[in-house]
Image (cartoon, rainbow, N blue to C red):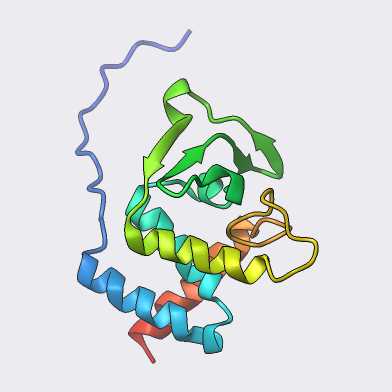
Length: 149
C-alpha cells in the first residue's frame, strides 16, 4: 500500500474570458467569413457566449427547444451518443436576449424553406446537428484569420 502523502497546495488556473469587445470583433468576422457560409457557426458561438451553454448542449438544440423566450436544455451529444445532462441542474431553461432570438428566427426561416422542414430539426445544422469537431475547427480558423487577416 502506498504511503499517504499530504497534498501540495497549488494555485488554481485562472479562467480566461474573452472581453466583449474582442468577442464582437471575432463574431463580426465570423458572420462574414466564407461569404456568410459559416453564419450558423458564428450564431452557435454567439449563443454559447451569451448563454454559457456547453458545445454539446448548444449543438443538440432543436427548434422545439426554443419557445420564443427561453432555450430548454434537455439533452446533449457526447462522444457520438445522445445523453441526458449529468445532473438535474443541467436540465434547465435559459433566457435568451433579443439578438440571439433574431439569429434563431433567421435560421428557422432559412430551414423552413425546405419542404421536409420539421420543428425537430437542429437550430445549428438543420436536419443533422452540426458536428462538434466541425465547430471547433471552424472556430479555430476564424480566430486565426480574424487576428491575422
